[in-house]
Image 1 (cartoon, one colour):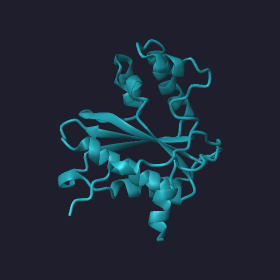
Image 2 (cartoon, helix red, strand yellow):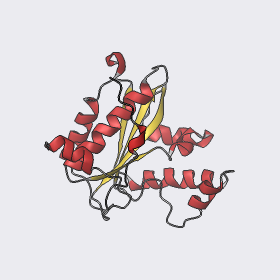
Image 3 (cartoon, one colour):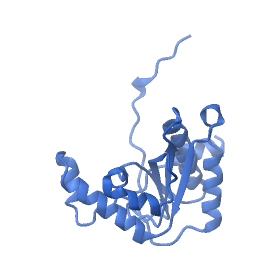
Amino acid sequence: MNETIKTILARRSVRAYDSRPVESEKIDLLLECALAAPTGRNLQPWFFSVVNSRDLLNRISAANKQIMSESAEPMARQAASDPNFDSFRGAPLVIFVSGRKDASMAAADCANAVENMAIAACSLGLGSCYLAGFKPALLAPGGKALLKELQVPEGYEPLYGLAIGYASEDPGERPARNPNVIAKID
């Protein structure tokens, strides 16, 4: 089996990280992989906010926790009641990906970029976790200041994030996949 396929099959979501920072060379490679992702009509409708500041991540997480604690959804309230709640799982680095609001395929294009980074992170010995649960904090009325700190340009909205760092856990074996979701048509 070739190395690319091995990496795709080995990549798992990591939800616990040590505090060691990710080297700038690795961050640059991840961003290069993100920019290589395919996009509809080559619009490249994305913007990347690279955040190494745990202070900023903690403030986004605290705002998100507050919103979730007031949610009508019991699961959100339960998650917010955890004293160790962290939208970013303790990762030392999060790359937020925002998409142009006027680009019809921005969500898919940005998802492609995040997946490229997740696979690249695995190949570099880094753990990662694909995220979107932080969005309430950024899209709430009080989120404008946070968006400004993330330097998200006007006309873009946050879509996804990728928590990245050195894993402090072994995520174990991948859960079995459902093979009954494939139709082969000749």
